Image (tube, rainbow, N blue to C red; front, side, top):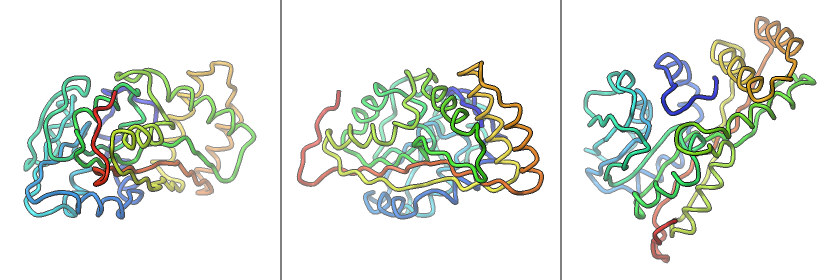
Length: 260
C-alpha cells in the first residue's frame, strides 16, 4: 500500500485496488450526487489516475454527462477512457472549471489549505469525495504489535505528500466541517475496505509496515511480519481499513460563502 505522494501511484497498484474500491464505495451517496447534477453536466475528477471513478460512477450519472480527468501523471492518464477530456495538470495548479467535482482516495493526501482551494473553485457546486481514509484499521486475528504499527502508519500519513501536510484520517471530518461552513449540506457514509487474505492485503500490509518503520525506526516488527506471513499463506487474515465517502451539495437555505 505504501503512503504515496501525489505522483507515486502506479497503474499496477490502481488496478490491484480497483475491485476493493468498487465494493466499498457508497452507492447511496453516488445516487444522491447524480440527482444533484443537471443534464450534460461536466464532472471534473481530481487526481483521476486511470479513470476508475469514471468507470464506476459514469453509468449512474444523467445522460450525456461529460468528464474532465485531471491527472499529473501522463502514464496514468494515457490509460483513462478515451471518451473523457484529459487534462494533464498538477493539483497544485488552478483547478479546472466544471459543474461538479469528484475524487477518489485523494483528500487524505492533501492539507487544509488545499481543501479551502477546492471549495473556492467549486463555488457551491456538488462534490463527491470518495474513499478517504478515516484512521480506522482492524486486523483479525489481532497481534500485540498492531497498535504500534498503526500508530506509526498514522504519523506517516500526515507527512507532506505534495499539497501541504496531509490530513490523513482527519480529512473527511475536516472537509465536512469546512463545506458546512461554506454553505453546503454534507453527508458522510462509510466506504470501508474489507480485505481477506490475498494479493491486495499482502501489498497493503507491506506498505503499512514500511511506512510505520519509516516514521518510527525503532519499531521492531520481526515477529509481526513472521506471524502475518504465515496467516496470509493460510488464508487466515482479514483487514478492515476505514474510509469515508463525502457528498456535499449547496444548501437551499444558506448562501454559499467564500471559504478561507
